[in-house]
Image (cartoon, rainbow, N blue to C red):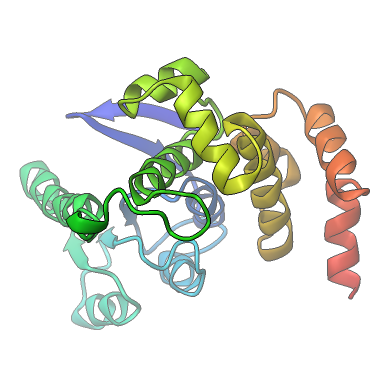
Length: 239
């Protein structure tokens, strides 16, 4: 995977539709640019898969293609794309349109949760105060976005405006485990889900979830589920 920075936008590049779909499932990017004519799997097929996958259906798709006939544009938009830019195009226009849709994504993500200020320090009946729920939700969201390279416990706590001890106590109260035990469980939960619901290569899944090698991934998976990743996938397919 090629990684580059374009005007403060981080870009992951795929070289065919199938590869792009697999990467989108793993990375859940904020926005996807698709051509119509691509090797292995064309852009319309890729878009259909993206919009039928729970993990990726919310991601805005923009077609950027020389296939600029009205019928093609209508088909792309009817599949759920938020925009369709025909070639030849202006670089400034593409960046502007991408920026518009990224801003919309950012606005949705940054909308604060509705919390009753009068109840901000009240318990939910299980010993967890609501301000800790916000802390935990923010921490788990952040960790899910950085599964392959999570910060240290101290760094994570600082980024959340708290300290490591308090953060671990909140996780212990909610999940009966400290932060990085939860992270280990979340990695393996996502691994099982990706193996069951996608055809993403097992090596890609392990790398995406932060395992340093396929052997380490298989060992951790077997210890948790009493089978290897390949055995799980084969069993699900045969069932």
